[in-house]
Length: 580
Ligand code: FES
Image 1 (cartoon, rainbow, N blue to C red):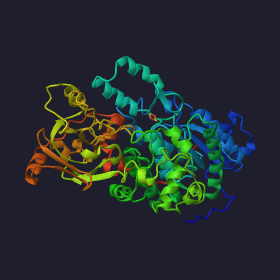
Image 2 (image 1 turned 90 degrees about the horizontal axis):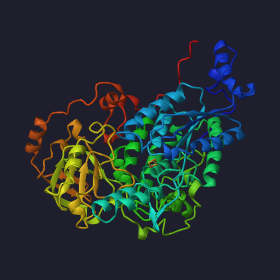
Image 3 (image 1 turned 45 degrees about the vertical axis):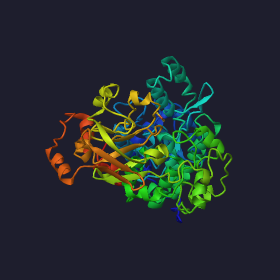
Image 4 (image 1 turned 120 degrees about the horizontal axis):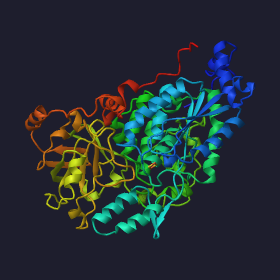
C-alpha cells in the first residue's frame, strides 16, 4: 500500500487550544506555562501525548515512567512538544474479578483523554495484558496518529536450574502440589524466582502476544515486542518511538491507515506462528470493531489454519521471551511468513513503509527458539474456531497448547454451574469423574462472571492428577490465561448467562469434540435442546448500579470482542469548542 503523507506545515488540532490570542487560548496556554514551558513551544509544533499506564499497582508496567523520559527525549529531538498523561491502568494481577472487566472502561477513558485535550499524536506506553488493547482501542476510535511502545518482558525466571515461565510455572506447580509432586515450601521458594526484573510476563502469554499483535499490525516499530524490559535497547526503542510519532503527525499517518483488514490478517497469522494467547482473539475483534474493519471469528480460523507454530516458547514450547529476543524476535517470524506467502507484504506500518521492508532481512540466530517449519510445534497453529449446537456463535481452542490425543474426543459431561460450584466440588474424591469425562463450566462469560475471568483452564480433579494424567477436555464460556495450556474449549458463545446452549448442559450428557472438523456437539436431540432452552430462566441481576451494572448491561459476546455496542466504531477527534 502506498501512503501519501499530508502537506507540512499545516495547522494541527492542538492550535485550537494554544494557537491564538483569544481569552480561551490564553487560558489554555497560560495555565500550562506554570510548568515552565517557554512561549515558543506553543508555536504549532506537534503536541505529543505520552499516554502512560504506569502504576505501582501494575507491576508489569512499573518501569514505564523511566521509559516515558526516553520517549520525551525522542519527541524533543524531533521537534515535538511531549506531555506525559497518566491513563487508566488495568493490571492483570490486581484487578478483581478480572482486569478484562475494565478494558472497555480504560479504552473509553483513553479515547476521551485524547479527544478532549490538545493531543496531535499519542505514544501508547503499555505492557500488562489489558493495557495494550485498551489504549489501542481508544486511539483507534479517535483516529489520532498513534504509536505503541511496550514495556517489554521480564528476564527469564530460573528455579533450581529450570526456566520459570510467568504464569505457566504457577499453573504447573499448583497442579504438582495437588498431585503430591511438590511441597508448599518449594512453591514459596519458587515465588521470588518467577519475577526477576521489571517487565511483563516472560512467556508467550497475553502481554507478549499483544505486544506481538501491535507489531504485526504495524502499530509499533519493528522489533519492539521482544526486547526485555530492562535491556538498554528497550530504552532506545522508546526514544526512537518518540522521534517517530512527531513525523507521523506531520505526515498525518493515522491508525485507520495502518490497521486495515490486511494488517489484521497478518496479525492473526502471527498469532498462529508464535502460539499466541486466545485472549488476542477477543482483543483483535474489539480493536477491528473500533477501526471499522470487518473482522470475524471465521477470519481467525481461515487465516490461522495453514500457519505452523514456529516459536518455541512457553506455554506451547520450551523457551521464554528473553531468548526470543536473542534469536531475532518477531521480525524473523514475519519474514518467515512473508517467504511462505502468508503475509500481506505491502501492509503499511508506523514507519511509513511496508511491513516487508521492515523485516525482509531479519536473521534467525537460534533455530531451536524460532524453529524450522519441519520442526514446528504444531503444523496448524492457528486458533481453531469450533461450532455446533453447543456453540452456535463459536468457541475457540488453541491447538498448540492442547493434547493431540484429545483433539477428537467423546465424553460424559461433568457440569459445574459456576466457579464456586467448581471450587467446592473439584477437590471431592467422591466426585464421579475420570480422565475420559468432559469438564463443563458455566456462567463465566462476559456477563456471567463479569469480564469473563481466566478460569477456563480449570484445574483437573486431584484424584485424576494423582494417576499422572495432566489433561482433560474442558469446555466453558470463560477465557484462559495466555500462559496456560490444555485441551480447553473457551469463549463458548452465546454464553450461559445470556441463554446460550451451554446453560442447559447436564451432568451425564455426552459431548463430542472434533477439532479437525471444527465441531463441538452436545449429543441430545434438537427437540430436547429446545425444550431445555425454553425452560431456562436467566440468573438474577448481580448489580443494581455503578460501572459493574453498566458493564453487564452493555457487554457484547466474546464472539464479537466483548466490547460495548455504544463504543464500537470511529468517532474521530472533533470536539465542541469550550465555553470559558
Ligand atoms: Fe501483567 Fe502478565 S500479569 S503482563
